[in-house]
Image (cartoon, rainbow, N blue to C red; front, side):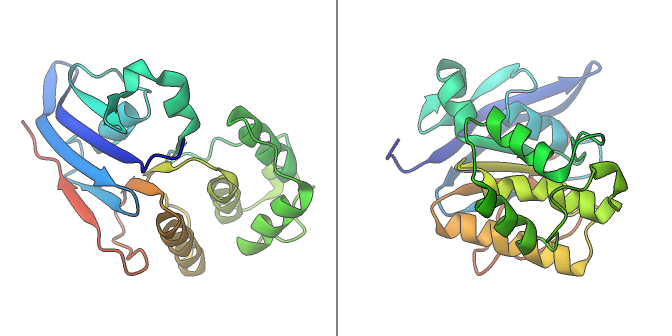
Length: 211
């Protein structure tokens, strides 16, 4: 697709356990910009991100990708989306290379070995490709998980607490990676307890409040 991507929330609402977390949430995000989702604990930040990714049902309102409901373009939208939760979602019994090959295959791509090696080196994991994930530190596991972003052609990145278990250098690497993604015409939606600047692109704020 050659269209300029955009993401729109229209009158979104969310209820969990019989309690309404938020309602009437509107937002519009254009290519080259990122959305910082803020709010108190329990107000529904992760629920909103899961709705964007199609992992949670939309009970009221709609989410539009390129001005079309995500429900009417499920497969195309999935190809344009890369989601990273606060869990790493790695197979501990597989090597780093095997994990990356598996997850990129789910996205319909197959990066060559030189590209994978370059991404691992960028994240401080040079020479770790054949190492079992179970033998990595928590910080290294997080860097493997984040390496998937650099290998993904998806235009929309949805990141839930992406800086967790990252040292200062890792946080800087990720911020630079997101900035490059925006510069290339991508979009990003994230929530984080750490307020980290993304290049010279100011955050577009969405603060959720209890309904």
